[in-house]
Amino acid sequence: MNDSSWGAPPQAGYWGPSDGGPVQGAAPAGPAYDAQYAQQTRPMPIVPDVPEHGGDQDDDRGAARASGPLFQNPPAQPYAAVPQNPEPMPDAPQPAQFQPPPKKTAGRDLGAAIGVGVGLGAVIIASLFVVKAVFVGVVAVAVVVGLWELTKRLEERKGIKAPLVPLAIGGAAMVVAGYARGAEGAWVAMALTALAVLVWRMTEPPEGYLKDVTAGLFAAFYVPFLATFVTMMLMADDGAQRVLTFLLLTVVSDTGAYAVGWRFGRTKLAPRISPGKTREGLLGAVAFAMAAGALCMQFMIEDGVWWQGLLLGLAVAVSATLGDLGESMIKRDLGIKDMGTLLPGHGGIMDRLDSLLPTAPVVWLLLVIFVGSG
Image (cartoon, rainbow, N blue to C red; front, side, top):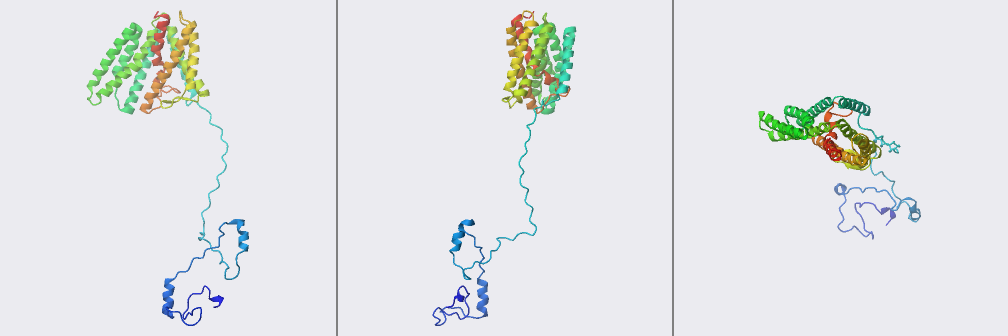
């Protein structure tokens, strides 16, 4: 048997190894057999000779392989056809360039906020020390505007229609009654305002009556009733100094919280309510308010002592912070950032009364305890 017969396909009249004759069971020769054989066979794919271990490590093994035309590998074929117009490869990512950290901002127009704050302070101080009745009128106007902002937002965002007319009239009456008749007058005005809210809402369909009057009673207590403690301070002989102390401590507390929190704030105080407030800011509010309280009690309040001012400042920092968080809770529930747009850089009147309203009864009570209602 010649070497050339290895790997050749069977032919007609194939003879066995002994060449003694045809092999038993061999297929007959002829065109019919050739066609049938062609249909039952498929060409084997050509697999390129890829080293198992790859690279230069297979050099010694390749030298020991048999060579010759019988063992010579066919030329390597590509695994897949290369497209005529391949898509361009994306550019390699460039190394990130250094970006300076963003600068902290106040989040508002600081210039406008300072200007409006100075203007409001001038109006308040002028009315406070010139004619007390004018200051009472300023407080009454602020209360009415605050009630309008609160009821407007409740209707827009929640569909709650708190009666504004009895609230505005009753709120202004509460402020005047607190100045004229003290706590007794404030409570009587509060009760009459609540009754007016209940009756006024009866003129409309009963649907939503309970939620409307509930919101009205809340608004009556939250805005005008708490504001009556400011005018009640004014009844004392040094009433103007007491009101000024109350305003100064609240403003200083807010300023200390903002300054320290903006510069050193890291730990969130109440992230779900007000993400901008930090524990460091609260410490700044306490420190600033206590220092201002000691100075005010020592030099502005008759018979006041500096250590009383420390306690007063601490109480103001806590109540002002809680008041601010309470207002933030209301605005988050309503889905708004500010209660209004009346004061550029500040928002609305209610956005300025948020820390003042709950602080007023605290300051009034502590001053009565320390130096009397005088």
